[in-house]
Length: 108
Image (cartoon, rainbow, N blue to C red; front, side):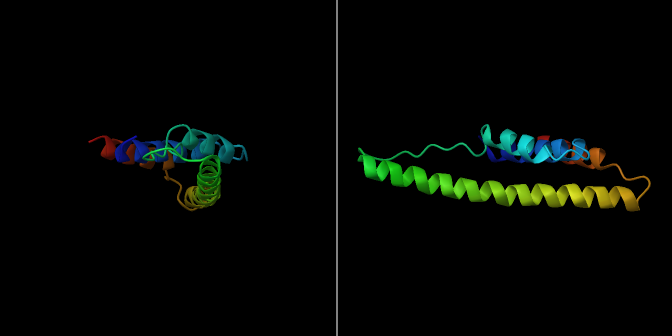
């Protein structure tokens, strides 16, 4: 997956987060969306790895991805709160339009 595609996926996740409203399920949905392609990984190794090395590599990657997932969940939670505060303070706030404009910029 290319960098632009990853950034577009991130904007899509922010849009999902915004559209979720008061639902607490948005974090699960957003992280699942990121897992499908962005957080997936493949490690190419020259030669053969023994079972212990294979398990150690898998555990290390799972740990890093798990922590990154929680970090991302924190960012999404913060975005959701900031978007709500912005809408509460600004009558003409249009978070969805801001996200749409950003997505269009990325597409160019």
